Image (cartoon, each protein chain N blue to C red):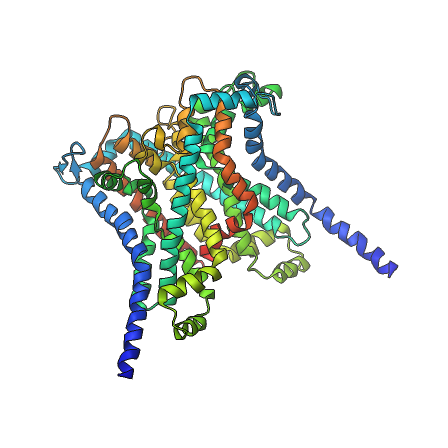
Length: 299
Length: 281
């Protein structure tokens, strides 16, 4: 009797545990995994949204994208942002964290708050702020004019190279402080005495940075690297609101192009959009995997 | 003693002198970080012409800009919508994810650990990939333009479950046993003991979920069609799409959209930083 009661209690506890995690688990299956399967099936179909039929040949949507100039451009843009912006941002963030981690530095809290502040703005808000700052009749042009650096307004958002540069500048502004917070947290786990020893040994600031800070922060670098890659591959708000993908798709991102294909004005190309989005999924997975591997083998 | 002080003093200033490059660099980065936001505040008080001419100080046009903004946009409706959706999202997401984090950590066994590892894979699922199936699902359920459409995809996220799971490690299991002997039910332990003890985790998570919900753009734009359900990010995005944009008015709109999150940032900065880094300790 007694034993049975004890067993019943344990079983009850076990059931309670499953009960607690069931709602969230079911939601993730229904809202993330099932849609991924669904997206894959849809990616093999064509036709209007209301009556999709199997594509013939079955991978037609996938072969089609290799001849899709706009998609290749979008992929190129996204990778350009990734290759230029992410390394600059991460190095800058580590450097800032390193400077702020100095015990003798004054106004530490103030600097940290101010550099972290851009995170408080929504993606749409800062995209619009930068759009206005870099407008033809914008502040940046009038400052450069007054300083005599330029003679006539630069059409920042109207030329493909400068428009890309503006997006990269905006991304750096929004995300550097965000990443810095991770590195600050990581640095707090490093014994301060390591730095003091390096200082006594006469190591220069740069040497300390490259030979102590960077290796010790490797796990945080891998994590922020994965987050940044993931975020960059999914860029949407900036492309839509800062440049609207223009001029002539010079700044459009993959997510923006997929959205336009799926739910743009008068378009509902669900099959093709799903195939494109599956490519993004695979890219995210591959790059995250590579980053994890690189982070591991350097041990 | 005076001697010691005299020796120490130049040492301190020597250290500070070595830090001068750091101060200069940090000051420049700080100014660059603050400037666009400072400029947003000033631009909201100027006419569109003054903004275009590059004025960088406060003007006297704030009330005019506000009148124009309210006359041309459903500002307070959108503010109300954003506030309502973000609040409901925060409450429901915290409940669902904290229950899951509690279950995964404090009742953990092999099966649950395996399930958790599978759920983590959802972090790699790009939002744009689930957009079409979710949109179809929501419209078939006739939930378009409702608060449910807004909140459903964000109700359970691996990030939030992990946040609660990691932080649950500090929760003392012994007290659970004691509570059981006292006759408290499993769900009772959650509400009466776990919830009050984990208050700081809830606060940090609430800040993150609220901010993300307030700032959400791609999904609301997809499922919340029409003026009466539009959110603040959608409102300002639409404002900037016209042929002739009133910059002063636009920046006032952007200011309204940013104000709640900036306030949260300054009032709850500790929770905000904790919420961002919390699940990766």
